Image: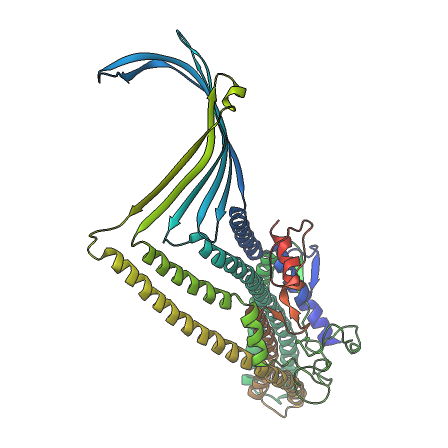
Length: 557
């Protein structure tokens, strides 16, 4: 009961020493992560980057579709002198006074297999000449088909069809990774506050114990059963405990403010100590919680004589220890398979390879430039609109232009060799990055699986240190041990309690690091894209996974 009162007091102290009337928010780790993904500035930046990538993808897709445009000049009026060359070669100035109107309708389609452009055009021009001999003139172009086609050059559109889908897929995977990084920041702030609250509770408990021991020492000193040096040492311990309490409360306030700012909330936050992830899946019912209605086996006020193991889970891919325990155990091959399928790293490697090949293709195509231009159509003129569309005449235009360097002193050859060298450099860098990617996953998986044992040891060590300290306190009261032994037991007790929280923090941090790499929820055995909230206005977005599509499409609206 005393320990529970201490914990309540420590939470109250950290929640706001100068603002006791302020509301408090009891927050689990999952709730903290969800709020961070929805409300933090970092999450908003990640959503903005995904939206930018989406609209770039939409622009690319629209560029492949026919484009209809209309251009017009309404009107064009000229009244001025212009030079005019006569039949005998002489030049004179004549006065022009005319009004012109024109309009053109275009349908343009890019031809991605060849890289050319096909345009269908229809136009009508009107000219009204004022003055002597003036009148109205119409010129029609009912239809004209124009083809512009580069020959033996690089097909930029064909390369775009290979690169743009990879860029958008990479942006989708990068967004999911960034949201997992936001989750890791939330975990860091959450456990910083939790650690600070634990330190406040420890400091307050140590101060109460120091005050009681000092009172006992004064009574023993009056009876002559303890030396003056021991009394002074206990008083010094009491003053040190008061100073530690003040410092821990200040640290707790700072970390409380940091978490509130990160989550963009006004209420003071009371974190709930989370359970380690286990083999239990969503479809597996959890065992009944202990007395009190929640899992408190990792809390400060837990029963030191009770069971400190997490609840056992269902059948999984591994077991975590003794009977009744089932910490989540991950297999390197499974993590690697999910990472290669979902992570942006694999897509980035493919994109950079294609970009290097594209640069080489551009450098090789720059050796010459040959373009074909062809136009077929009909045109007519008349003094009326109807007359301009009668007695049409055909128009044919065919042009082939080319540019071939005769002497460039090896410039284009150097550009080609440079592009090829850069491609080899990129390939080497990508091979190295792929090796490091696999190595990082292997090391992180081993660290996560090892952390389960570290957490078990920390829980047991904490229980032993707590029991040892309470035993030493009682032993000191009857005069069987010195103040030095008592101080050593207190230090060991405090370190064991903080180590327990630190190991729990490392466990969760390793888990979310693996989630951010593999983009896979190993507890629920599903993609991480399906556990995000959706907005009210979804917009379709192409994606390989149905779950990713439902969520990512809700971001780009």
